[in-house]
Length: 638
Image 1 (cartoon, one colour):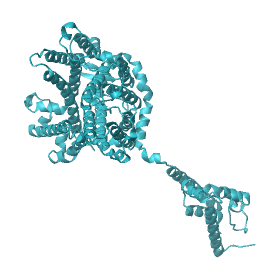
Image 2 (tube, rainbow, N blue to C red; image 1 turned 45 degrees about the vertical axis):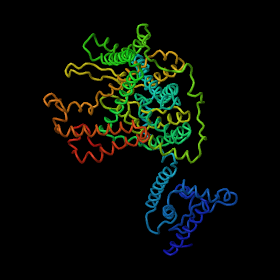
Image 3 (cartoon, rainbow, N blue to C red; image 1 turned 90 degrees about the vertical axis):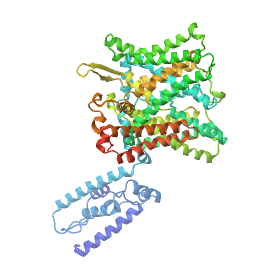
Image 4 (cartoon, helix red, strand yellow; image 1 turned 120 degrees about the horizontal axis):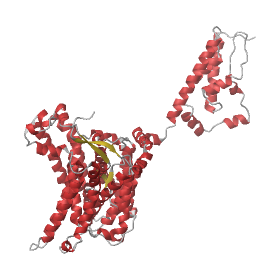
């Protein structure tokens, strides 16, 4: 009989170590704790009566064809090492030695327990390493924030549609009102764009883009209460890009498409990467200046339209401009009064709600019919200039030839795309965040990153077709929320309280579907007076001013202290500090407006918007304490 001593046992351990390393390199045995454990189950060959050396049976039993089948090439061996064989070799060797070489003195049951626990730990470590190594490139591109947004919205996606069908009494008047509220900007901006771009992008393009992108966005977006639409800021960028292409003698549509393609790629990448969470650093300071800019732009377009009638009219006969002004003012006044009729003291709640829901639509139709009467029609009030048939400007095809410019020019289009991406990031996220405010009492989860990806996909499709880009529409989005809101009068506080908001995708989809159907009825739009559209613009611009504390503080600075609200910032931090904060916002608004209106700087306008966040983050804290900023409603985000 052979008897082990300490030296022999050490030599046996070294021999097993060499055999295990050689077998692992050639790929003969699956190098994992489970395989060793299974090999040990085959039995042991006793060496002595008092001690025994256990050798895994699987090492010596594979011969002939079995050996050849189990051999692996270098590529397969490396892949296995990275994929499934992630546990360090030394750990396997220690476990194998524990199982194969038992001590001369000791308890056998303790050794078995140690072996079993080591095997379990090794299996758990291998599983965790396998999970980490099996991560694909997609796992690194798609952030957890985006996955969280998708998961949250998928949980309520069915109810986003079902809730609309359950509350058709609320949806039908909202769809009718929002149809005109969304059609008016498309037609108005299309008319302005047709003049600026020399009929390159006109009314048909804007209506087609508004309808298609609105339907797709309502299906894919994370916040269905938010709308996308043509905006004055996007129009300013398109105008600047068109002027640049004209001056340099470059083809507009290929440049336009490649700028949009780069923008969509950047925007989708930001959404997948979870950049939507950065919008929390955009405080009320930035929101109010940006919304004031949008409101001012709507009002400016309405006033410019009225001014154009006086400039182009015969100085000896100004009847037509004054009639147009009367129609525009009447449209704005009646629309505002009917929309606010719910807050009046007349009739009961049911009648007030009915007037509020259907009043704005009735005013739009009534003023258009009034202009068709012979007594008014003889003055020649201008109406919308729309084509008789559905045809793109210049008779071009729908898809743009992307290879009409050299590859170097395609790459250079990424530079203006960065500016446009910045504009989209600010406009889209601020619009959605205004919708998600606590005051609106929305219940379903937010999904800023999913909204960004949805807008990026829409932008990609519009760029291929050469159609105008859409972006977050704050005015239409807020009107959508208010149209779907139910409120009741609280006798104790004397104010209306929001009781329910029907959050649905149905209204957004149907509004833009009706605009798409209108493309077959372009002749009907030719009877709509331009002053009526201007009146709707005036209403939308004024509506956006409500709730903007920046604009309210401009007037409150001159109001007596005893007549201010108890929580007004003037009473907390003084009139001087409040006036200084308001003056900074007014300076920012003036700077943004100057950049937007100047044709030479319009293309760089999006980059200026980002400076609002820089001013708030780095400049204002030097002049205001955190307590003062909190009193102004602009606390620093944490």
